[in-house]
Amino acid sequence: MYEERYKLHPISAFLNFIKGLKELIVPFIIIFGVNIFRDGGISAMFNQGWQGLIPLMIGSVVLIFMLVAGIIKWKRFVYWFEDGELRIEYGLFVKKKRYIPFDRIQSLNYTEGIFHRPLGLVKVKVETGGSGKVGQAEAELTAISREDADRIESEMEKAKYQLPKEALPVMGPVEYVEAPAKKEATVLYTMSMKELLILATTSGGIGVVISAVALFLSQFSELIPYDAIYEEVMLFLRFGVLIVALTIFLVLLIAWIISVIMTIIANYQFTIQRDEDHIYITRGLLEKKKVSVPLKRVQGIKVSQNPLREMFGYATVLVESAGGSIGDKDEKIRLFPLVKTERMLPILADLFPELEWTPELIKAPKRSVHFFYRLDLLWLLPLFAAVGYFFYPYGLLALILVPIVIAVGIWQHRTAGYALGEKQLTMQFRGFSKHRFFMLKKRVQVIQVTQSYFQRRKDIASISSTIKSGMMGAVAATPHMEKEDASRILAWYEPSGTKETDS
Image (cartoon, rainbow, N blue to C red):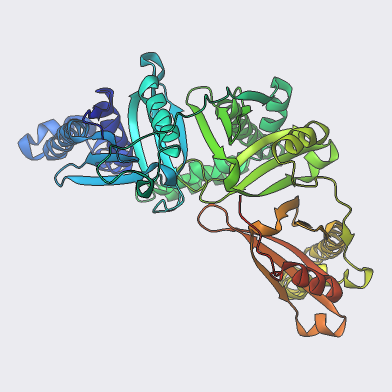
């Protein structure tokens, strides 16, 4: 039992204030924006006496309340170690307590923001298999020293070697077996600047930037003068197609440059390390993040390649981990954001020696090729007909998409396949990007075989496999395979007489 209570660093009060301020930034902009852009602008607020200052007074009161609340949260937050548990006491108005057994903690994820680094602090997220909401950690220590973070890890290791209560004398003290010295983590991979630049330029983050701008502007839809904008746009269109095309290109180029910069900042100095039971992933320039992934919690590996990366031999590798995520949105853990396939395979073989990384795939039968594009054509043809009728003759150009849809379906057919080993299932499929899942039999949660009426006539079946990943699970599929292949996978998955132990 430990008597000492530990507190967060005082900067936690400021960080709590900043966090609350970020949540209210949009309402503040809307409230003060309405007053700034109305007749008279800011001066009108002061010319109307105290009534004009009401928005400013309300905003000031809210800011002061948030600052005081941040200080109170920091003062009331304490943690300590007792009976093999991390115990936390916190709360603004109501005092709450949370007890987290060390044996339930899957990982401690570290983040060093711009306010943490100068003071040698880290933010620690405690991840467990039973974390509540999607993407939320079981507990979060906003700002503690690196020494305090190491102390938590030390207590976790010590708890592993604590003798069980039934093995202790009735009146005896709690005893510990001396924990062996933990080996230092070894570096397996560091992303080169060339790989980082290729990742940034092929990440497709331009869509994220444009959608983020659109979402931000949607918050001010009531303030946007659409009529005036429409008139300006119509006036601008008179400059000609070339000027309009150059302007659109310039906007897209700026969005692409922003996405490249954001990707470089997020993945700067991406490094993979490992010790005897964890993988450690470190990345980030302005905000440095360190995620630990317990090897025993890894359920499967997903290797993805978009067409451009596939052409040049690059791939992205995701870890499908039980209860594991990074960030606040259940974001998947990227073991390799971008890596050459020949460089990737030796590292994966070192991390997961029980998996076969180059299995020979059984491909989809030739007679199933039309299943890959038939449904797409069925719902697209009425659309093509309508466009051709109402926009004749230029609408007939939509029919150009028909051979493109068929070509994509043939491409998907040639990609689909699976490999079955004694203890491993590998499944490969394609939407537009190619995905290959590697799964051990003991990690598979569900195998599902589906057949439509038309598939039954051709002895074709679609197979899907589900493994536990994050809060929702991950699904791999090989559509339109031989019915015998589906039966073979089902027979392989059926429990045998001897139950496999989960390591």
